[in-house]
Amino acid sequence: MSRFLSKLLINHPIIKSKVCYPRYIQPSSSLNSALSSNDRHHLTLNYLTNSCGISPQTATSICKRVRIESTDKADLVLQLLRAKGFTQSQIVTLMSSHPQLIITNPDKILKPKFEYFESMGLLGPWLPTAICADGNVLACSLKNRILPNVDFLQGLLETEENVTLALKRCFSVVRYRTEFMMSTICTLCACGVPVPTIRKLALWHPKLLIFGLYSYEVKIQELKGMGLEPMSKVFLYAFFSMCAMSRRKWESKKKSLMSFGWSERDILMAFRAQALFMTTSEQKMKKVMEFYLTKAGLQISDLVRCPHLLRISLEGTAIPRCSVLDVLMSKGLIKKLNVV
Image (cartoon, rainbow, N blue to C red; front, side, top):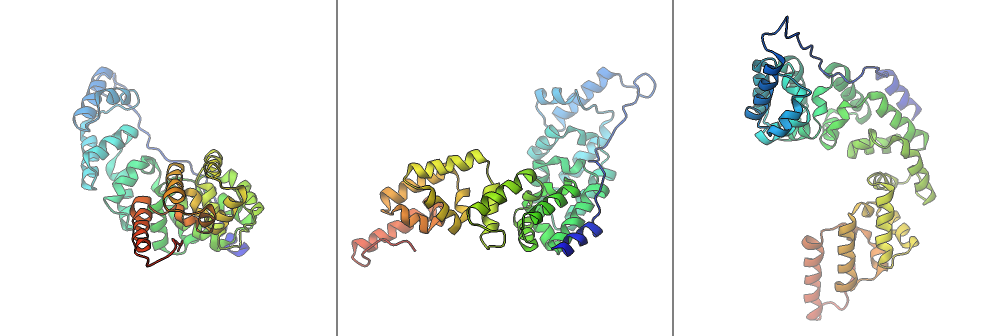
């Protein structure tokens, strides 16, 4: 483990760069521009509404932060986005949340990032959707932020294919500081989580590398208190399950289960058997519990032994299968509804 961390620290030194946002110096209207401030306001407002399709109300708000000096560069930005597969609604979404992109140099700032992501296999229509979900990625420096992060991830995940898979699961990872991800890994290692487990977490749930750092130690200690050690096979799923929701949601789900007759011991036993069952939404949890206990004729003890039953689709799996079993029982082909 120490050799792994030493290798990462040597090959991926802490980067002190800050998020690189394009800066634009607005020329003085009296000296460097033929357009007055009022003219630029109307030009920007008209362009955002007519060319970008943004509502007048939103465009008016954007004009307080962004001013278009010339439509030539803005036209090139829109042409690039459309060429990369952005739909009109996606352009509206992106420009409404990150309007500074409309005055960005497309050839120097945007195009190289698109080309790099495409070279990794991050292609449309996935790429436009991912960028709309986190447009800050396009505001980051390719050289100082994105490339070092991808290089760091490859050192952790070992292959380019794994890095691409991780980015498809959490594209935002490319814009967070490398030292933040390193701090997360060091925290997990210090708590006894082995490197192979960390690698699986980063591959399956890369969001864990950038969120919740300061609560990880508490969660790990809580899992240990449940008898789940970091070296155990189920720890990976148990850790993710706890990190996937807030403490309030966790307690609310426990309360819902207990309202159906579950005990603290039942919940703990089920969690040890199939930790991911707690990631089921509370609404679904209530629906499946009502079905299993009232219509399917199961007991709480059955569900405690097989908590994965709370994760399967009620309409698509549980109800059809129970219907088949009812038919078999009515014909005397089986005597009892058993949990498989």
